[in-house]
Amino acid sequence: MKTRKNERDPDMLPEYDFSGRKGVRGKYCQAYQQGHTVRVRQEDGTAVTHCFTLEDGAVLLTPDVREYFPDSESVNRALRGLIALLPHKAA
Image (cartoon, rainbow, N blue to C red; front, side, top):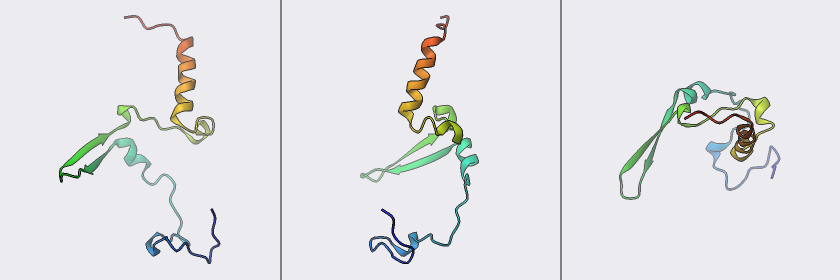
């Protein structure tokens, strides 16, 4: 639902008004490729830290490929079709 520029969503806090600001595409891309950690606080007060790297199975798709494969399901379906064409790995 689009709103007009001079109209504000009453539920939107002022600090989330980004009108007049310009985003930077790919600002965090290099840092993401190097890996990152996420700290999740549990209800009991403890914290669990998860480390993510591209080696953990994440794959970055270039924009031209992303046009054809917008989600994980479509990527997996295409790759399974290719796997069926490959010779089996030797044990």
